[in-house]
Image 1 (cartoon, rainbow, N blue to C red):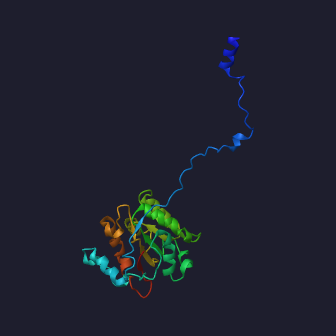
Image 2: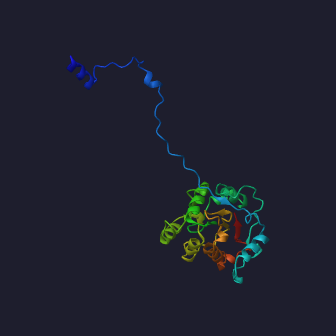
Image 3: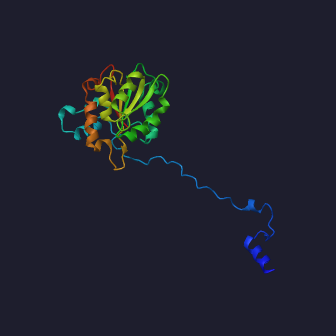
Length: 244
């Protein structure tokens, strides 16, 4: 008798559970698999002080930031964009461009020939270039591409090859990469109508493009290229600098 009881205890197969309704398990809250947090947009700081300057103040600001007289940019170089009343955040860049393009989105979504952008966006880093490129996809069409031109993940010859084979209406890149493409004849300046400087954005160290000498000097070199500089304030084929 003792052996029988011990066997029953050992195997436990003959013990009956308390009476529980068959559907009781369904009343228990199911275990939830922890979900991954949704990707959050990168937090950035903005300083719109410079973007809200009129052309005369912009010319003074650029002049006060440089030492070489030959790199002085005249007032006529700059487009007055103080009428833009939205935040100068990356998500608002398409609206900014449309407001100051004569024919709005239609103009920004076309391109006449390969390697001939009408709009060049100057960003302070590869990451920022990629962010702005995503926002500007609204202007991407079969006839006109929006291209990101960065050095970190793309070799120069890859950018050269892409520009020469595609009609790129809007080019987004860092100052050095854009100038390198112009020097390589992979970006023609003849159709450029506007150069937009991403001036309100501040990086994780709270610096704007104007506060980083390693970027500001190449930016000035680009803006002072002879084939661009001679068209500031021109009656025809004018090039304008817009600070966003």
